[in-house]
Length: 505
Image 1: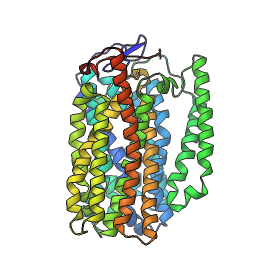
Image 2 (image 1 turned 180 degrees about the horizontal axis):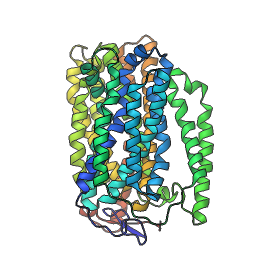
Image 3 (image 1 turned 45 degrees about the vertical axis):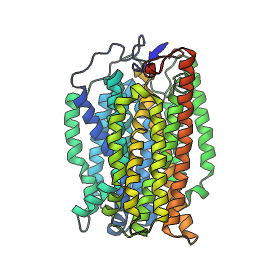
Image 4 (image 1 turned 135 degrees about the vertical axis):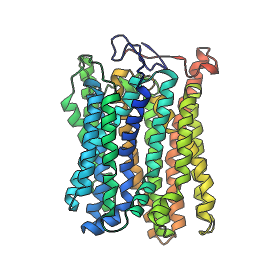
C-alpha cells in the first residue's frame, strides 16, 4: 500500500477516515485539545515546586509526598496505549470528553484533599484521566488535518508539549506566590477546574466524531499484559528516591519478559485476522515510526530530567525562590514555543533534517549553559547562561513537533490513537528515567563533597549524552532517506511529498 508523507495513509481503502472532508471548525477544535493537553502535561511538573509546602501542611513523610508527583506520572503512562486503542475503536471525541471531565473532577478532589492519602489517590486518578486524554490529541489532529495543515497543527501541538514541560516550575512558582499563605498549594489544582469546564463545553460543540468502522474489538488480555509490563518498568523509577532502583531492579527483567509475551500475543492476533491492541506492523512496516519513537524516548530522558536538576541548583545552590528558579529557565521555554510553531510550517519541506538541526541546537545551547554555570562566577552565571538556554530552546522547538509529525505521518488514521499512545508511552518512560536518574546523579556528586556547580555540570553532561544518542538516531534516519531518494532519482524539493512504500496495513 502506498501512503504519502502528507497523507499519512489517509487514502487507504476501507480505512477509517477514508474520505477526508475538511471540517470548517477544525482549527477551533484544535485549540480545545491543546488547552486540555497543556493542563495534563503541565501537571506532570507543576506540583514539584509545591511539595515542601504540601508536606508541611498535611504532615506527610517525604516518601508519601513524592507519590503526589510520581503517582501521576505512573498512571499517566499506564493508560496511554489502551486509551488510544479505545479512541480508535469507539469514538475519540467521546473518550476525550469523558477523560477531560474526569481530569477536572480529580483536580477539584486534589485541591480539596484533607490528607496525604486522599491527595495521592486523587492524583493517581487524575493521571489516569490525563493518560486517556493524551493519545486522543494526536489522533484528532490526524483525523482533522491533512498535508501541510497537519504539519502546522503538530507544530502547535509540539509547542504545547515543550511549553508545558518547561513552564511547570514557572507556573507553579507564580501560583504559590499569588496564593501566599497556608494551603496556597491547593490553587495549583483548583486552577484546572474553570479552564477544564470551559474546554468540556467547547469540546462538545467543536470536536468531530470518529466514524464507526466495525473495529470495536479491544484486546483485554493485551491491555493487562501491556499494563503489567509498563508498570514493572515504571515502578522502580517512581520509587527511585526511596531506593527503588536498588531494591526493585528485578522488575525491569520481569517487565521485559511480560512485554515479550505481549508482543507475541499481538502477532498471533494479527495472524488470526483479529485487531490487536498495538499493531506490530507500526514498528516494522510504517516508515519512520520505530526510529521516531526511539528519538522521542531518548530526547525525553535528557529533556525532562534537566528541569528538576536546574530547580535543585537554583533553589538549593543559589537559594532562589520557586518563582525565581522558574524564571531562570524561562528563556528556554520562550525559544521553544516560538520555534515549535515555525517548525510545523517547515517540516513538509525539510522532513527529518529539521529534527537533526533541532537536536544539534539543544545540545549546543544546553552544553554552553552547562559550561557557563560550571566555570563562571555564581553571581553572573545565570545571566550569562540565559542566551544559551534561549538558543537551546529554539533547538528544542525543532525537535518535538517535527518528530511527532515524521513519526506519525504514515500511520493510518484508523490506528492513530494506538500509535500516538505508544509514542507518548515511550516519551513518558523516557521522562521517568530522566527525572529519576539526573537528580540522583546530581545528589551523588553533591554527596561526594563537590559543590553545586560541579553537580549541575555532571548531571547536564549525562542529559546531553542521551540527547547525542537521539541525534545519532535522527541523523541515521535522515541519511537513510537521502539514500532512498537518490536510489529513486528524487530531488531534494520532493523530500516531504515523496511517496512512501510499505506493506499493507
